[in-house]
Image (cartoon, rainbow, N blue to C red; front, side, top):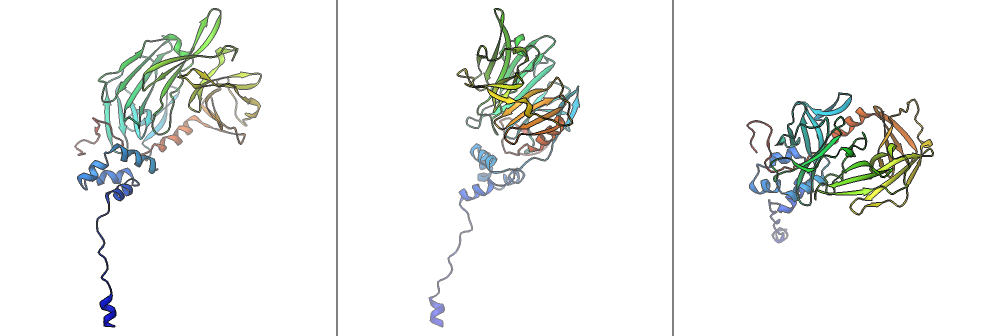
Length: 362
């Protein structure tokens, strides 16, 4: 028996230190609030949690959603999304929110998860309406904010942009063009591509006169290169250009019109190459049967995908599932309330961002 115990080997001592690669992997799955506390553990962790590759990996792996910070309210017969401090949500990208004061021209970029904020130079006080958004390119780390302002009374449209960390003031990209309103129709919304905006463009429709005929053009502004390209709708594609709906189909600019009781859609599949889809997408409007809902004259197609069409009908949204051939009707305000809490928490921080909490230490 003694020989047996003597022959037994002592247990191997296990190292108390994990490889840093494993530590990094574990941290990449934790929520933002925990990671903010872990910055104080050591210098190595502090640098890791500021590394852009780690931040991108963390954003892809985690699904932590922010607690509702914004709420919807009616203002001048339209829906606005504001925070408790009366800042309107104008756009968001990769966990960053673009906000503008409801009482002044003050704009700021904010990370609601880390409570970091960056105030931008005041935008010009021009135009009765405006469209704003920010973009973050995950491949380059570049961040931009654009603003389109338009005034239906003056029939003027202008575009300006600011590159975070480079521009001290807003830069005008193009001169005002009264025709960019599309004869009273609003400008198209910007393209949205996933969590960040590696591909990011703004599309502006214009109806012009060529001789005795009308012609529809779409001006596409690539916001990263700041290059403007113009694509003309093929002749004969639509007869009634005045009643076309400009919208986004699978994140690409498109136009739609009613022809013989059917909805005809033509997509600009590549604005850089001026390439339209070879064939129209035809959708029978008889499939759009909405019970207990009065379709107004203001109904318009606002968004389309390969499996869904979304119409705006006054203050209602009508969603049609193309595959299931089912229709859902819900209030526009309710749809916004559902989207707002989906803002994802992230560690993304821009240079010159500071804590919005007075006296707080980074």
